[in-house]
Length: 447
Image 1 (tube, rainbow, N blue to C red):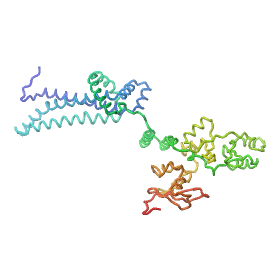
Image 2: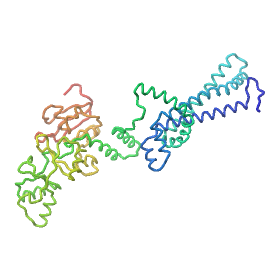
Image 3: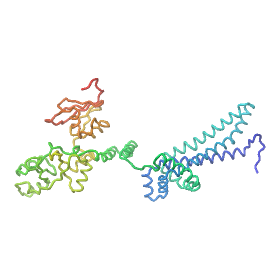
Image 4: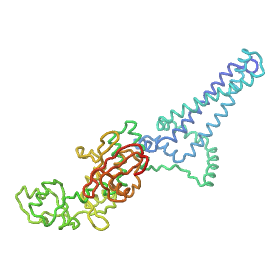
């Protein structure tokens, strides 16, 4: 049996024993701190990937996350119990030793016991804050999934060891949750905004390339962008008429080498169907003549309303096994045509046709030339704007100008949006062909 001959109970052997116990308590507290953070912060998606790869520990972590009250209860029991024991043992271990050292340096002064106690308290508290709280939690935040896999087995043992206390405290906690009608399970639903935020973070970290970031962002825009934002507008449609002669058909195909042409009966709103240019080319190459377009296997055309989103159009293309459609408004008038390539252009940007003319051309750091048919989403992205005023009322930047001016714009008309001046610089009949956008200081007075 170990004994001490030192006064006031200051025994080096007991002091070392106390330090070892405090070190053990710090280690236990660090384990619970790491467990708390890692099990809460571990990402479900990554754990599911690890589970699919055959790691059984990931399945146990996911099970704990489904009932977080259990492991949080064990963590709090462990942390609070260790903190109390650490305070008691720390005061017993350090206070006599510090007091004896101060008495040797300053003599027996009345303030020495108080200072010894305060010094012992601050030392033990600092050790626990640094080594049992801050460092373990920061490590757990850096790699929560890896730490969670390491601590899940010991945590399950603690759950079984403290099962009666866990049941007691959880029962009381559940009573309060039911009393105040609070949710008791974590909502794991991921929104599109969260995915976009993750993609932005990945791009900033260099994990995703800039074009990959834009493609992923465009995928979610397919549900919000309507057909007019991607279609070929009515005035730009090149169509064939049943009354066209063979020479007229050949001339249109030669001057406008599209893969498909809308076929109408006299005027554009009398849609009959569409014909593929390869049918015409086949007849020309084989020396066959034709007198009417219906001899060229005119096909039924898919008609879609102009209120559909691009995502809806993709579904229509898939269901009808088509890649070409005519867009009609509520009055059964043709407002445009859309192809699957138009949707892919919206999705992929200039990756599909890298040499096509840009609708937005940045002249310098402060000005842009923008085609009037450019969608408002593309304009906001290029200018760094969150949205434009009354953005739900129009699809293109030309529609924005008409909505703001409340009339058909003419050249030099402009609208101010914050520091940006949107000015009409080119008009084709009544159609806004091009705008100049300049970033400048807000004007002193309105338009």
